[in-house]
Length: 536
Image (tube, rainbow, N blue to C red; front, side):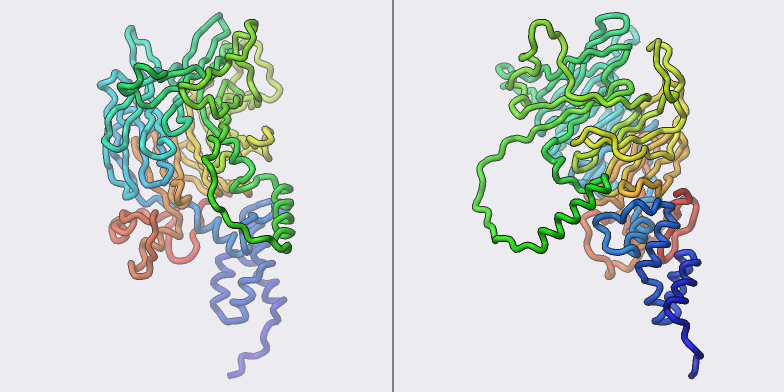
């Protein structure tokens, strides 16, 4: 049958350039010619920049193989579909933490419990800390080998006083190994290595001046500890203008030279050129015949102070309580330790998170008015409702690009609280007080999804083994499990069509025929690509 003259490819391409991406995909099913044109790289580059509203000066992701697949990655691989709501807690859920292998996670709540759940999203153990006179649990962290859990909470003392306390729980038999005082309570604490953790203490030495001390504590306080130090001072830092150290984090400095993702576009281009030159050269064949025990790597410590982030370096021989005390090299005139570096954020810091490669520090802050000089620390200026997420390169110690924005907070200066964020290889997510969690792409600096709750979202957490799995915790007393549209479709497919995946938990398969909230911000999910968010 004669179908008449065939349109030239150039004309079909020109028509497709004026269509939305879903119409292009449907048109590609018409015939082989249109199918070939619908996969044209120039077409998908234009669709990509226009749909996601990305400046054309921003290059494609360094690991992307095509514009078509890159468009699909941002559209189909964002964990924005709610697949389950957990109601294990009876009060506000404040924090979530995955183990390093991603096979379990913990949650802390105003109900004063810490709960551990496995990869099947089923409750394994729950511990109440009320027996230790805690008001609530607020933070938890797995040690590097996932054998111990650090739990931080608010301790209720006599005469209505409150302070912080850290508990270390064994994950083998869920026994309490040690308890460490922590002041103020929003220092939270963190692991330095598998067996030692960092806590804080605060001493006021004047009306506006205080001293923050960071302590290194041994997690085990066994019988042999009578003859071995279980605690050692790390840093003694002077706080001025009524500010105090709050959150403490540890970054591994020696991992900075091999980041998973370089955020500097010029550095990306240079790395690609160097790789191309290396690929064109002939290399000798090398064999590794074994190596001696490597020296324990240096780590940099990053603390949050009011409006500033500060970094101090910890040397390998100072990482145990039996090692030398930091600051012993100070002269008699120096009462406080000096700081390696200070970064002024010009705002109230309300959250911090490290990228998986420890190269970048992401900081949530609420800015003070532009150009404002705080003359009276006890009467600071009002802070912005918009939350700015700053990105700091810990190797160059400078801020990268413009701040990420979309999330908001409404509490005043003297009542604002911590909003936990989390960073995966390609994405960064944060809670907010506007009843939503948010997901951004790290490379393109764009907001990709909003995750709805009924109240403030306090914490979000990516699975370290699968960035298409995200958890969010809220004041509505729930934990929501979010999956990407791609993984939702896989879970609903026939089991014969599925390949075994370590992080495709059986709960997804169990729920495929039950009531399944398959929607993205109120939009039904069907076959094909699903729009992850209304906003860009």
